[in-house]
Amino acid sequence: MRMFGRIAHVLSLYAIFESPLADCGQKRSNLQLGLDPVLRKRFCYEVFASPMNAAVPNGFFLSKFPHVERHFGSLGKFPQGLLRIPPESQIFMNPPWTPTYMNESYGFDFLEAAKRVFKVRFVCPIVNSEWRKNIAENYTASSVWVKRFWDNSAQEFRETVNPVLFWEYENEKDDSSEEPDTPRSDVSSPK
Image (cartoon, rainbow, N blue to C red; front, side, top):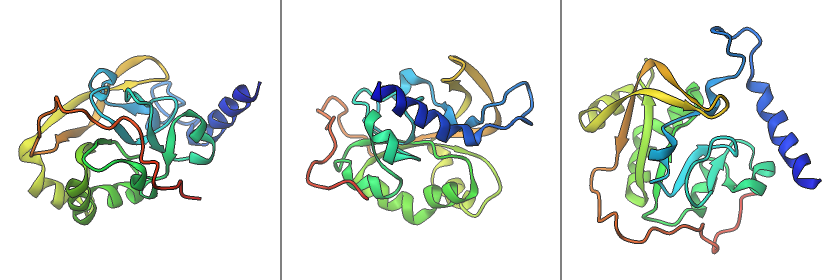
C-alpha cells in the first residue's frame, strides 16, 4: 500500500506541469519526452529524468522531486546529485526546456566541467538564448539532428517542433569497458 501512495505522490507533483490550454489535444507537458529509450539504455545515468521516463539499465537518475522519487531510483537534484555519480560514467542530459535549467546546463562553464568528469551526452533545442553561442561554437559540428522524441505517457514517438541537437562526448574511450552501474556510496544524499 505504501508504494501506491508514493506513486500517487509523484504523479500529483508532476500534474502541476499539465496545462488545460495546451494545443493539439495534449494536456500533458513535454516534460516526460525523451530520446529514444533504446538509445538511452546505452547510458549509465540520466541527469534529468523521472520515474515515468527514466530508461537507463541501472535505474539511477537525477530528478525534480528527489524527496519522493528516491524510492524509484533518484539520486538527488541537479546539480547536487552529480556528486553521487561515479567519475567517468556516461551521463545523458535532457533538461527541462526552461531558461533557468538550460542556462545552467548548456553554459560553457558547466559543460566544460562536466566533460572533465563524465562522458557527457545531451540533447539541446536550438532557441535564442545566452548559451546558444557556446553550443554553436563548440558542439554543433559534431552533433546530429533529432527529429522525434519518445512520449512515455502515450508510449509513442512525437515529431519535434523545434530543431534539436544530440551530442556525444568527443574522446570516446573503449565502450566495452565495464561502466559503474551503482552510485557512489561515499557521498551522502543532499538534504
